[in-house]
Image: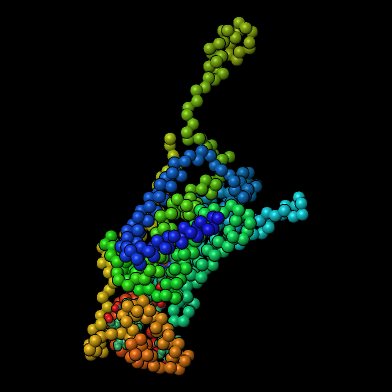
Length: 330
Length: 134
Ligand code: HEM
């Protein structure tokens, strides 16, 4: 159900773009209006989400971490898994964001013959996620050649390293293969692991189908169909310099690629993909676990009116004495 | 309500916006249009109606595929003659055909490749052409 619905969503998107470009001739709408809307929604939405998270109070440290907390000097603390200093937190965040460390700890729980619960080594999700995200990053960096004039030299370096394999005369980009393999794995995982399938919703499938659509249309353009890249760059730079125009001779396949990217951008802040920003604001990752060393006062505590024993005795001393109740000060 | 970490979050948001809008501010003031490649070569000037091996629109998107086909047919098939869509015959050669007409490498191939960010490595083996730009 979720799969069919999500496929339909992406299918309708592709059909709508094709219709708009091929039949209705709305190239300007798809090529030059849509991207502005998408980028505005993306940036505005992300800022809105980040500010929203930023405003949520995090009154105390949440020590759900996998390691020994810093305590007595002779007990070895686990300074990356359970950091107590800012430097440690930066280390933990870097490992999390660059290497997906907490995903690396993923295990698979299984019941064996009745009451025996076993945890299995399970690194495939970590590997698949890592391969996909890094490939995506490199593909996007290589795409900077469409968005910059002159093209910065680091884009050529990435192209050179990524494209050291050849297909025919031209570079076969490794990241194209790994990107598609990564997305396919992440999708098949949702199809074939029953527990994961059970909890998968359209919100999980739609981003994957969108990415698959973007990757496949890009690969088709580069290796199979052919596209006038100089014209594409003219279109992209036109949008980027706020002088949009639609050059002749760009095929519909490019508009599909472009339209799906716009859809992805606009959908980003409202989907699970916001984890791109959310990871930075995750309280269990970005706070040093120093609750025992420092006192953290809840920021929205109002000043509580207290009546101390001394004040109480001051007020009732005479009455207490009369009633024979012992007092501290005579 | 005081939010002690807000300044980090604001800094993060600013960094995010600056990085994400890189293509916008990098290109401020650039012309953005594709370079006008020059067709002003002796061989093309001689032609009554200048035309490429295949139609120009096809060449723009697919000249690398054509070159690949030529390379395979010459090196692997031992053929040398290419019959174009309009029946004309061409010798399948990068240097002796393409660069015979397009002998202005720097104002033609290289100009467009620099714009599109491609760096074909053919010239490590095939004849070198003068390149001022690199
Ligand atoms: C989410 C962002 C995007 C992803 C993941 C993506 C992915 C891909 C992939 C995997 C390819 C295959 C070839 C290669 O890697 O160079 C490709 C090609 C291509 N993409 Fe994208 N793309 C994205 C955004 C864009 C945008 C915004 C444009 C607009 C200029 C664009 C234009 C192209 C073109 C023209 C090609 C063909 C390149 C060639 O023939 O060499 N892509 N894309």
